[in-house]
Image 1 (tube, rainbow, N blue to C red):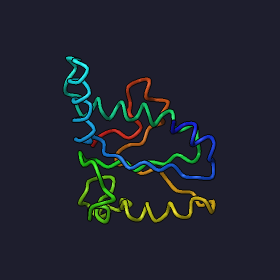
Image 2: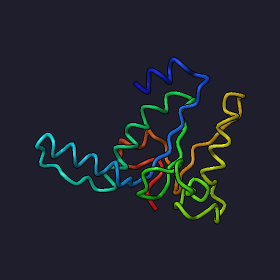
Image 3: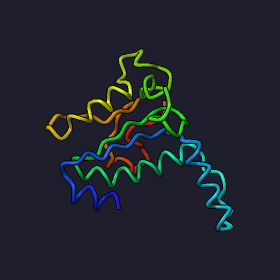
Length: 142
């Protein structure tokens, strides 16, 4: 669904805010496993993050895909005050070490359609998505 929308709307930015170890998404995973009587309950944070990166890898084919990854297990950002203090390092770093704050990145998205380049944001050594096949996430956990 997202891929088709990205392809059909190249001038629209598709921006994703995600935590590297989102506790709520991992709980959803467990709930689905129980519902379908699957004995694979409990997705560890590294496996969750690996699967997120697999999904994001398919999105990188489109220039209108952007992501802001936070080293956190928080689920929601934009409906809470942490939208002002979160950066790629944590929900409370507030750009302390020169990292871009989430609120500033969201503000930049307004100018995407005017041709301004907006960068993906994450904390850690950034690897190419193509390296995922070797088990290296594009932005490993700290």
